[in-house]
Length: 83
Length: 493
Image 1: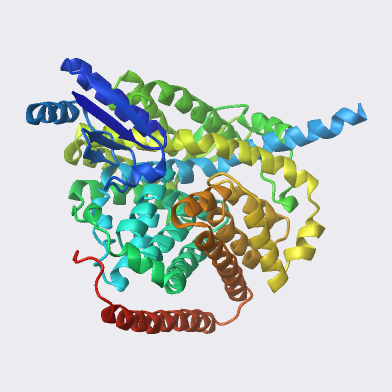
Image 2: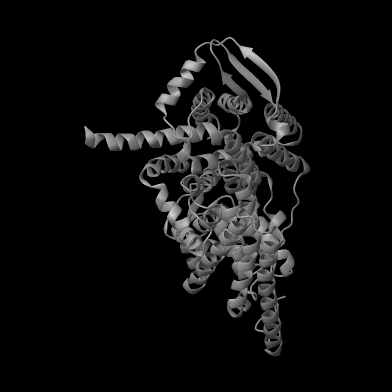
């Protein structure tokens, strides 16, 4: 089971990240829960210095940029394999 | 009918101001500036600066690095808040965090370029230099006042700052070329403004078009209003076309380039070229002047094209275009509304009021500038056309700088963010210091404008900062001794 958290105040880039992850998850047939974290106090609990941040199963995989679909697919597969 | 006339005149004034701004200032200044801001966000890895903001970085590294982060990384609020919180809670502490917060809105690339293009390079430079000096000063003062609570934060981890990264050489060259494009379009030096070749095209009617325009958009240079030229009208039309094609070509550029992307890029290049040409409409023909500016713009565009093709990946280019476009989408609509509003308001303010209040470089004048900046909130960059309006209505450049420093620093938004992260007491202390320092900045710059010896002013500034630095050093030494005598709460090193 995958839990994907998108950290960010809802700026356009956060939406792009969510779109990318959704596509990657659908593409590999993985089921994932999506959680949007918009509260800054919660966001700063994670070790990131700029939004959007992407957290898969409580591990920060990327922050401050929009990852490509291929990257996200790799991260999702890695997480599934190690679970 | 009398009742309707007044509002109609105001709307016309607003639209006129808008048209004049779009034609005169937007293109050669704002278009490259948005591209640079986008390139900074997309191509500079944030770790290349944040590695200097960890807790273990010495003060003489972390304060300048905080200022650099403010001007290079933080063009948008997506970065400002997390980075501020990160530096404060896990990194170099409250001092550099405050420096970062102070420097980011006043001296990021968009604000500086726009100030330079609209009001003048002298004010842009003063804004940069004084923001740097006072940003570091305020950071040090805050570190001094709140040194006790800062010690607590120092015990926490700093994983976020451990990553290091350098910048790709190709990306760096690309960024430098964008700056060259900006400078060749906006600098007003002889090499760039001289005419090197002239060409006459037999296009009739442009002079009549020009006359019609001056009647449609009436202007009065004595009030600081500008008209619209025939060239300006062509440029506004091109801008509209860019907006349309960018909506289809850049909004989804992350999924890949499409035909509209190329249309948008070609239109942007074409617009810059037209804007860099000198156009003199005559009877029955139009004289086109090839200036140093046009040559510079052509060279810079060609070099950009070459570097982009050879040294940047498609993914980097996509990121760059998306980030630039995102800035345009985020800032430009507000700017348009703001400029329209300025055109309307200018009709309602009497120059005598401004002159009486802030026409000279006095303490009261500078305080008035700061007070206006504190109590009014304008979206990013709108402070610049407003400052331009004050300038044309007779405000002295000193109080004007005081206003320009205070307005973006003390928006309601930034105060709320700051108090959420560091608490109310600290944020109001910060507000007070910003108000004081903005007034000082205005006074010092006003002295400079009034012809007081530059070295004397630099001396004042250096003395002020030296007193601050000495105080901080003394306090941290005393603090260090107190700490050493206490048992360590955590062994984390």
